Amino acid sequence: MANKFLRKCIGCGAYKKKEELIKITKTNTNEIYINPKSNVYGRSTYICRDENCVNNAFKKMKISKILKQNVSINLKDEIMTILES
Ligand SMILES: [Zn+2]
Image (cartoon, rainbow, N blue to C red; front, side):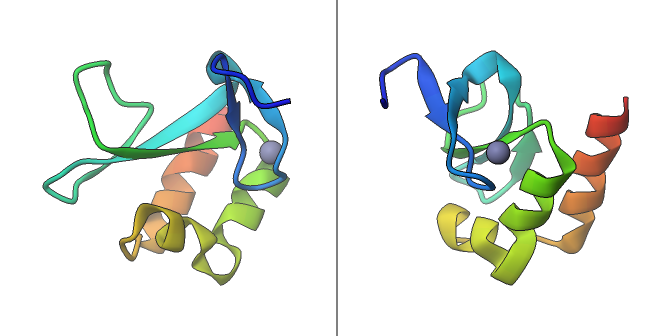
C-alpha cells in the first residue's frame, strides 16, 4: 500500500497523494511550517484536508509526538483556516 508517491495522514492513517494532503514541517531550528515551500527541509508529517483528521492529529497531541516538539494549539487553528480557504 505504501509507495513512494503516497504519504500517510496522521489523522486517519490513509495513504494519499502528497498534493491531497496538508504538509506540516518542523525545521532543524524548530520552526513549524504549514505547506512549506520546497526549500524548507525538516521532519514532516501529513494530514488530510479534512476537519476530522485535523482533530484526530491534535488529539492527545499526536502531532507533537510525531514532530518531536510541542506544537501550539494555534497551529490547529491555522490548519483549520487553510481548510476553509
Ligand atoms: Zn486523514
